[in-house]
Image (tube, rainbow, N blue to C red):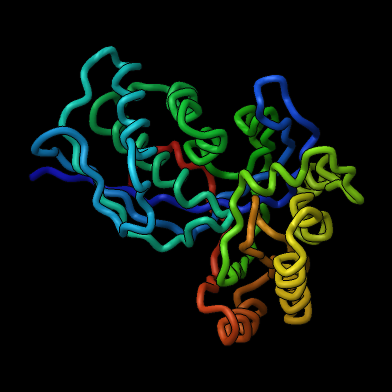
Length: 293
């Protein structure tokens, strides 16, 4: 049976700001997002009948259509043709419910595979629009690289790449429901805001230190107390291990630290793995919509 596969890289939020609620029920966001080399693998094959998804049960909804199926159906609606029988399988590496966009990355990789197989002429902008029908961060996960994300997260502006570096990511042993955190944001006056314009300027000059000192995520201010203490502890540990800066990614609870070199990052990796099994050493990844190699 014919099958093709692609990697599904995770993302981190170098900066995340919530500007306020929108009339459509979403929140107005302003973020600097970065693709990283921690990734799942998505395989697409011709199915026997309907749509099937083979993955660990923890990553599948209890009932109803999966995001992958919804995205595939939206893709073929765009092509004005029926969705053929498809078999999709996921090999998971990115922790789920961590603020790393693992589920969205899987769906984005599936969309890239569908384009590769059925409509290679389809522009990336169209693939991003299809992705938006199933998730606000899907357009970025389709595009990848380094980008300023505004609106719901779907209004993207490409930025100069994050300078070469290594990133240590730690996922503590608990989950943070995104909807619950957004509910805690309601009516909140944040004590701090990320200097996103300053971060964009630092990216423009290739200054990793300038980016690192501006890492900030307003979600950290609304965490439940126990989670806040855990996230703060991981950030402190990464900084003590030599990170240039550290922050929580997305709605958490994964925390990352930026290091200039692998030699500087390895001691932090070893130290953090003593406490957190889901600790990873990764690097920045550029845009994902280029030719398959």
